[in-house]
Length: 58
Image (cartoon, rainbow, N blue to C red; front, top):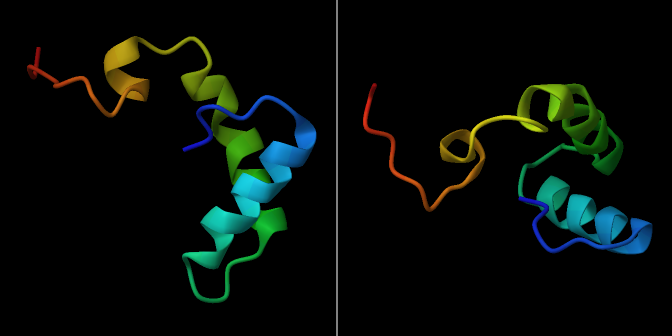
């Protein structure tokens, strides 16, 4: 979702784009969600974080 973001301005812009996809969603709430879930995905295996990877169910 935030792949390619390299600075804070880019992060804020991308989060605003994501929030605009959901009626009634605020950028602040999306940012909070990203911060809350980061510990779960920061060191996660690639098959969890990469949408291009297929899961083999093992």
